[in-house]
Length: 105
Image (cartoon, rainbow, N blue to C red; front, side, top):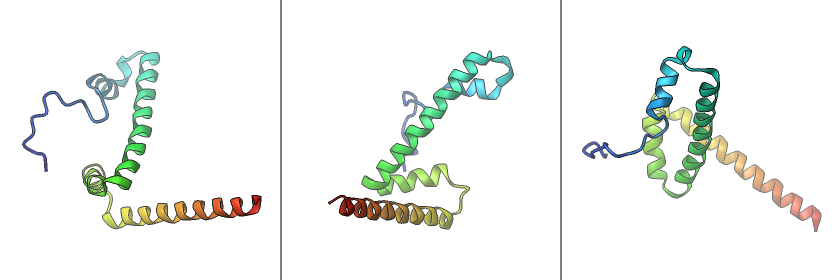
C-alpha cells in the first residue's frame, strides 16, 4: 500500500475542490456553472472507465486495488460475476465479427 506517501501535490482523483463545493452547496451556484461542472465530472467518469479497462488488461493487480478502494461496498462475488459477463460479451462480439468477416468473403 501507499499509505505513507505525502499527498500534498497529488492531483485529485476525480473531483476538484471547486466541484466538491458545488456538489455540497448546489443551490448557491448559478445554473450555467453547475451545468458546466457536472458535465466535466461526467467526462471524468467516462475517462475513468477507459482507464479501468486499461488497468484490467495490462495491470490487473492495480485494477484489483482500484476496485477494492472504489467498490468496497459491492460484494466481490458480484464484481466477479460482472467481470465474467463482460468477458463473455467480449467473446460474443469477437465471434460475431469473425462470422461477419466470413460472410463478406
